[in-house]
Length: 307
Image (cartoon, rainbow, N blue to C red):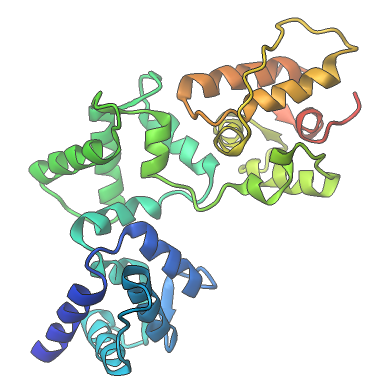
């Protein structure tokens, strides 16, 4: 047991000491191809080699013996049921303590819709910020969900750590873009399409987009679903500050929809701007004024559909 522990500690010190949670997740996703949260068999060896490469490049790579010793130490430490596989939570113990803590957040959101559900839940006063007490509430729920029992002092320490790392303007609260750094989505769903290059979206592509953001399968996009769509548009679009008119003629509507799309794809992610864009989008595309978008209504924006 002592020998295995020494191999474990030695490998960590030599090859993963400065590894970040982002690097860990990049490598993990590469090897956990089926997304079941486990790595097993020979994948473990390749996983450790890639982690070492992420930290030190090609100059210094672990030997086959070091990899073998590390695998045996990991399995001895974590594989209690002897099924020959290791979970992501277990493997994250190889990260420095601060990065291991951050890994909790990287497991919370897969899509921008899920992110906006969290944002809207914990921005309890709708101020457009997650303030320190709201952040504390979020952390309490997150740690409880992860099965981690922490003291009040440790919880306060975690709040301060997050503010120190992500509160870029030191106002002791997290803006939308700062919270998005703390809770990064796995991938912006819209980047696989040509929306940001000004191209038309085909009907087949549009159906995929609508199905993705219509999380509850209600046939409409509303509330956090609509905010998630806008977040993806705003984060990865092209910045355009063209003036947008408040009243429209029928003749100019199609051209104005292109300007609306340009405004929605503003790179500066901000809660207030997101809400303004939401109201603007509903004002133009929500034909029946029910506060949500049907497929035909959203198609006006994304498909350049004829009205």
